[in-house]
Length: 289
Ligand code: PMM
Image 1: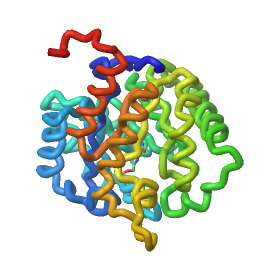
Image 2 (image 1 turned 180 degrees about the horizontal axis):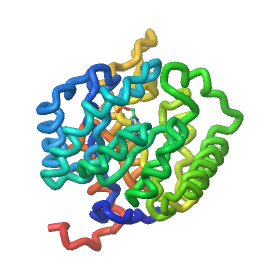
Image 3 (image 1 turned 90 degrees about the horizontal axis):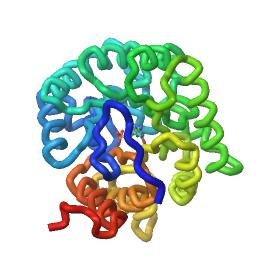
């Protein structure tokens, strides 16, 4: 098993971290916009921490396949008050944004990590803002905005190509001033990827882990899980019924050495990463009472 990395400024509990998702959007594909109201979003974030989330990821723009962009004004309005309130409660908040302006405002409001699904491609100012702030930066594999990203899901060798493209993005953001020790890589499951691409990336996660930076995996409630679990007549399993499948992915990637999983349903995943760590340590932990 590849060892878990510590990322400066973020918790290092000795197991794969759990990032709980708070989508402050009316149209998120997986939680139906249930946390669109600020107070509801803040309460949900605190509940996720109580359930074992190490980080809470706050996002104001849906990246559901086919989604249209929101304005930066609207994204700021959605995200900043939630980031500020959760940060004031001592929560490690990550901001899920592709916009430098939103990242900067969120960092000022207390966010400790920038989660950029575009890996710095959507807004060329992003890497400089993150570099200047000196916060950890999730660089995800991305080939274009959600409205037409599925047209870009063409690969000869998805594992090699995603790896190469991610490595190039990491080099690019380092040139723009991001500290290499603060980079986290993410294969971007579901982003310009068909189900078979996601499964291949999961099967060969070791190749991404070998690059060096910590790896974050976001499989939670994604369509490829629903497709796998489709009914005999081909109807995909609804997103909200894919949490057990998400849990299976969590256990597998945590055992493979992932640094963090991004999930909607925190408690079972927080339990799973602890089980994986206990097995990996083979009984050599004093918490095994
Ligand atoms: N997936 C979504 C949103 N943000 N961030 C990272 N780093 N990795 C992901 O896989 C990812 C992400 C889309 O899922 P959601 O709309 O259900 O939150």
